[in-house]
Image 1 (cartoon, rainbow, N blue to C red):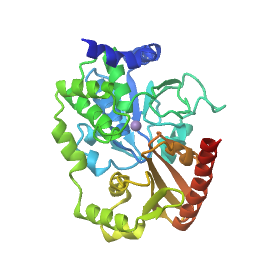
Image 2 (image 1 turned 90 degrees about the vertical axis):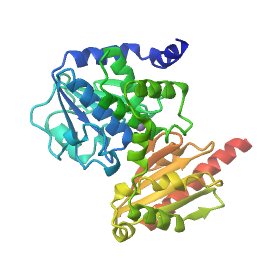
Image 3 (image 1 turned 180 degrees about the vertical axis):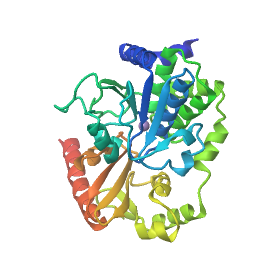
Image 4 (image 1 turned 180 degrees about the horizontal axis):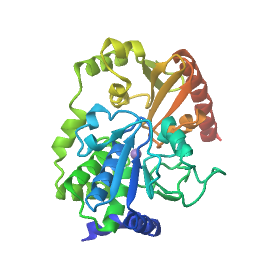
Length: 358
Ligand SMILES: [Mn+2]
């Protein structure tokens, strides 16, 4: 019985907001789910879990993606009900759920434009009008900008999926096994298969509860992780060959270019796993993966396995994330991002060395 209490304790200080979201959900008829751009397992798992659970209680719920569902998540129950479109309907719903999304802009350019067209803005925007719809922001990023009409930010949660689980429990919804599988995928991916330092007793308790509700852990892992194409493996090999270590400052990096993707018949989302292998080097413990989109844009993933807060460098470039895993976008070429990161890392590491010495 004590186990139950521990899980509940983490959410205790958020009870008022959880209750409020539960009440709003019960009282609404139409609901939208929007993921963040470059959707990952957490944002997709949350959106689909909300989709399932609310559909099962006869709410009119729609889930919109502005980009295709990444291949490894297409097995998730309900993925075939996602509407992949750059346009949103003209009539706003009662509620909009946005999960795992630290800033309003991160719903991606197409949906920022669409929401603005419909009169929906961040609460910090002077154009925001209360009552047009209710934007519910569920997240675990420390730097969340609290842009929603209701904001439930739980930095202690390993995944936004844990928070959605807490809301469902408050609603006492009969969690269908499809929804449970989606939440399990959310938690599994954000904890690196329960291996990152964010994995807590609560994480495992929630996972156990989801398994109790019908999730088959092996199937979820197989579908998400063990389904790479030969092109993806070869791309990984090429990226590992390209590894460069900066011994002076203490970080290393690699990159993926459009030419590499084309050679192995991959798209950018096929390069998501590379960082997981990249970050396993014993020393140094900070790494970057530069994913070149085109001549003017590089997407950057940052990972840290020591006392270096990866968000510090991501923030230099207007990005963010978590202590050990973050990212940012860089306007420029591969050479330019490599030089800019070296400069930023030099500054940041100098600062921390000075602090230690002082
Ligand atoms: Mn997340």
